[in-house]
Length: 253
Image (cartoon, rainbow, N blue to C red; front, side, top):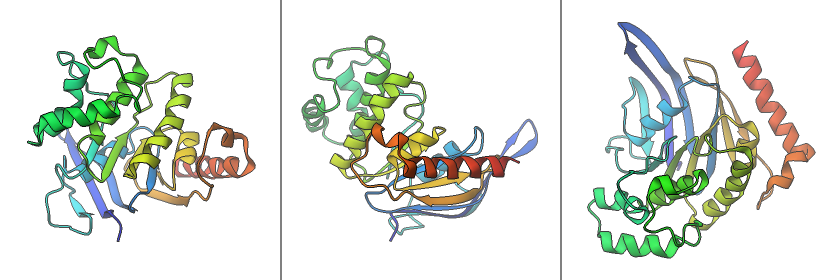
């Protein structure tokens, strides 16, 4: 049974008195410990889809099930890392990391100890008392992901977590993210504009059309793991990339 199942979901918004259709009959799923990416042009509803899965929005039509349950509230049942790191500027790093468990009513002392034990793995050791403005872009993104993982949810939604980073930092972070996914064995759903990134990271990729967003292709990435940046020039990798780019072009025509 898929841990996430989205079935024929549609969503519209009202903007300045006009109806704005974001998603149209979208169906997708993610299985346990799977890395799934969603690729599509700007404004196609990728972030809206994550907000629906996370329970921040409800669909107008269709159903969303987490772990096979369509009726239970979704809010608070997944870890969600939005596009911006969202670190609170008045909190030191360790206090930012434990914000999720604190809001969820868990033992903050235990969460702090867990956070301290993971700081070296996330490249944040020695920065426990730093404020957000004292951290580099890559460090802030790693901190945001650690904060999400400390919520200890089986499903983690990532909305373009690497989009604001420079090219060199982004390449390093991709390898690091793969390592984190393999270590923590979470189900990850990852939104990105970067086709190379999607192929490198994913088990499966959903390609979306321009607004209103529809799923126009589902691609299984049959590349062996572990993976690294050296794959980018391999013929098999290029074939997947070209397939996705062609699908994007055709859906935009």
